[in-house]
Length: 449
Image 1 (cartoon, rainbow, N blue to C red):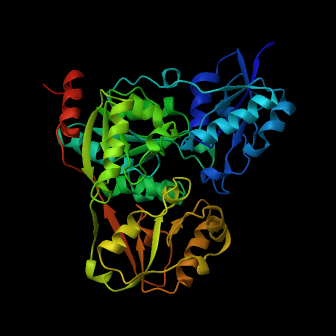
Image 2 (cartoon, helix red, strand yellow; image 1 turned 180 degrees about the vertical axis):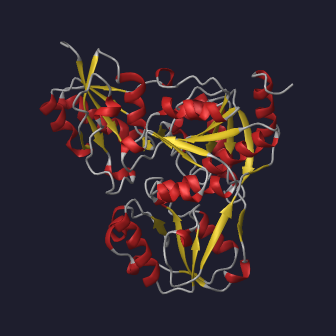
């Protein structure tokens, strides 16, 4: 087919595949000549430079599509004679985005972002979408709250999560997780467990994979209504009937400085200001003003994120190693998370510095992300990295591990010291709340009278 425009999709194993599947796969005007992979997006080593396989790429790509590293992009544009570069991953600063655009323009290709209008799939069932302006805002706990509300109304509900297909793509076209065995059978990484396991803990069903049209077919067959749980600060892959977006007053101003977080903010029907119980009043008001400026029609919901542990006395006066959610404290830019806040709230004597005990890639993580405080990111994107996390924990000189990651670490590592798990939930404190907004949505869609 002559005169097809040659395109490189810049991605991080997720949104890039969705952009390809929905916009480029069967589009004879374009030839996608490569994906690029961003190592800094916590991909680990599981996938490596795997191609997008023939079976998923479609009839226009009989050899599949190769993957290269993002740092090669300028030379890759020249090598592959690319005319256009499409950016397709989440949680990057506007400065990073345009610095990369400048490199692309100098290398001789056009730079492109694609509107959600051309990427969102229309569902036959109502969709309540939960997105965020950054990773670590509390999107997943909000998604579970939405799921609980919908389920309490007697509806069949499933959640669909933004992709994390780190394994064999041909086995991950669509995935359904309802039991811990499902997680084990899928050989889920820590990042996947952090997202899927809390749903299973609460008796919920969550889908994921790498082809969201195929995922939707299976989800629609099971559910009356669908909850979209947008990873990092990704856009909704399905056209939402209600879009709630979470902002974080612990990072005031980020809601206007990251992509596609600002897209989400400006698209939102409702904006949840989370973590107000641990944020400074001035920061809450700064975020509120930014929300009103960017999206004056959005309903603002004020919310706390209260922390609990099973036995507060076990923490008081102890020297603790704090383990935090990996994405939140690495590319999410937070120096700490729920684990540190719990250590302070429940009276830990000391937060032990994990750096002297870090081994392998974890030691390199501390070198790369210098903003990290005395917390250990839960990184485990391969068996090797998971073993490094286990070794680091077991080497640490502390009384116990205080785990702020959403998963149960005792299921995946053998620790030589007690692990106390920190739990947190969304607690709304203003009206109208999510229940009122969801009720109105369901009435519009004819599922409630």
